[in-house]
Length: 299
Image 1 (tube, one colour):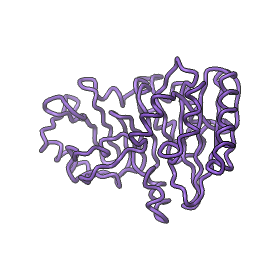
Image 2 (cartoon, helix red, strand yellow; image 1 turned 90 degrees about the vertical axis):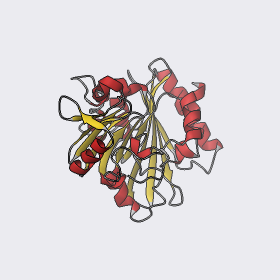
Image 3 (cartoon, one colour; image 1 turned 120 degrees about the horizontal axis):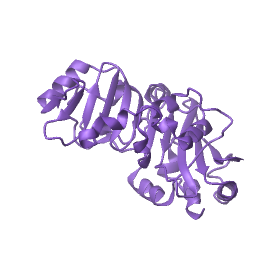
Image 4 (tube, helix red, strand yellow; image 1 turned 30 degrees about the vertical axis):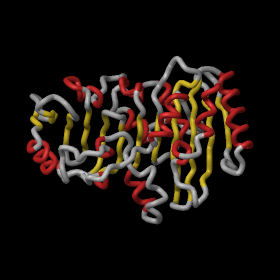
């Protein structure tokens, strides 16, 4: 793993502002969640992770897009909140790096990666750094019980930093994964076909239950950001949509071309589809242009 630190997608300042204010988002619901890769990834995390931010990344697609302009996709090309974003090298030494990951789902302390890994080299490095295998011969844990526990194969790595029950976070019981929670299913269906999705923590007592931002792109020159809100009722949905449209008008030309829609029902959705120009880097809605996210502070 490179020793240089990587900054997580939700920048420190932007994240502090957003977390203080928000709790939910969704996208155009015309697309069902079905067997989407995002929902499949969420199905590998126990629902206890709903208290954290969750990030899904199709790193393979992001690398393909980045071939035309690596700098443009730099903000969205790293797994979010994972040990690979740490300032200190991990216990896997140089035997693991982000380029080996094809898809990832991460919280601040647990996650699962699929890709092509040198399992022998990684486990050898873990052992040399004081890790030991637990009774199941699958889980590697620090000798002192502190830090990240891992399960490693040639095509998948699961990790968790939850102490004695560490791997429970990435080994959900039947019907108890994030994919089984209605708010996540609604948000995923709303986001549609995205190569990255960032979910803020689920807050069932707030007007906005869950918020998510998705990135869509068919080429290096085109990117669309989809901001989604899963809200408590139709009145909240109407207020949110009105505020979003007002921001689009007031901040012109920053969000020109944005389309705001509402789907009503038992779990209303509000969706803002924001097109980027070729000069704008994907991820700007949570890194620099926060006005649309901040709408929900007044709901």
